Amino acid sequence: MSESINLKEIKRQVYLFYSEDGLADLAIGLMIFGFGIFLMIDLPALVGLLGLLSFLVWYFGKEYLVFPRVGSIQPDQEMKKRFVGFFINMCLIGLGVFALYFLNRNSGVSFLGQYPLMLFGLVLALAISSLGMVMKTYRFYLYGLLVFAAMAIGEFLGSSVTEVDPFLISVVSAGGIILVAGFIVLIRFLKKYSVVSIES
Amino acid sequence: MMADQKQPILNIDLEIDRLVHEPVRLKILAYLSEVESADFVFLVSRLGLTMGNLSAHISKLQEAGYIKIDKSFKGNRPHTMITRTTLGAEAFSKYRDGMLQLLQ
Image 1: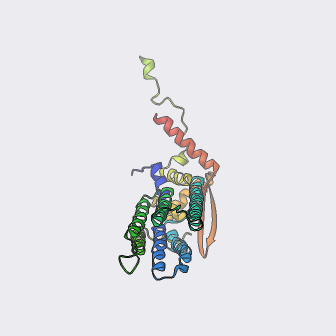
Image 2 (image 1 turned 30 degrees about the horizontal axis):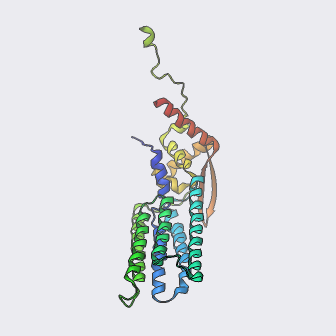
Image 3 (image 1 turned 135 degrees about the horizontal axis):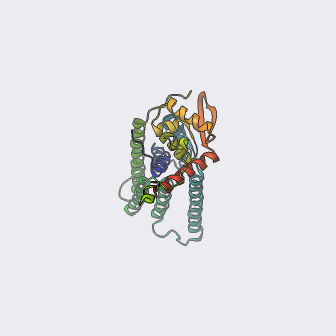
């Protein structure tokens, strides 16, 4: 019997724990897809609920689908620092975007340039890619690129092409693709791991 | 010429901790070195062991003071969290350094 112990592979396996179930993909996809849908059906007030809804999907998914199959871990100091760093950076970027938005609105000077939605897409893409970097999950870079492309295409097409705003169609499509990818990853995860019987 | 033949093959004073040297226990300590703590199910799923087999190895590591076990309930399911102790971290580190020294 041969046994191989690869510390780098073990580290990779631990990082995989955070993303191999596809729940983070589903949460991101749901937020972007829902954002587009709620604006499309003219219910912008519901956009605020998306964060909560995505969190609930992620939380209950972990609790009922993931933990019984692959267990749970408490991250080490390095991982905690990575997540805290990500959270602080996202808060700073969010504040920066809000500051730009209010400056733009109140001063009359266009700080956002000619393509505000594309800029918003870029910020969102950076946020998604940063999450990918923190979790060492490289498909998130593709999601970031997809979101940026969707917002850029939507903005360039403008609102006069069809009855429905092409920007929203692009956003819903990008969110939909991420949702489908998340479901595929989740289904693969569920097929790969079965529920471990209760410990004695 | 004769003196050359009496030279030991490995001229290293290396003490191997047999408890850590066993592959499964070494893997358990390696996984625990990458996390703050992990539960029983995590180790079962990653190591591909049965509950009984893992329990036996965990008990040996616990007896040596290399890991700490916290038992609780999550709802009505028993939940066991395993944490590597400072002694366990030292043993793992010493073993790794010893092996590196041996192979250099």
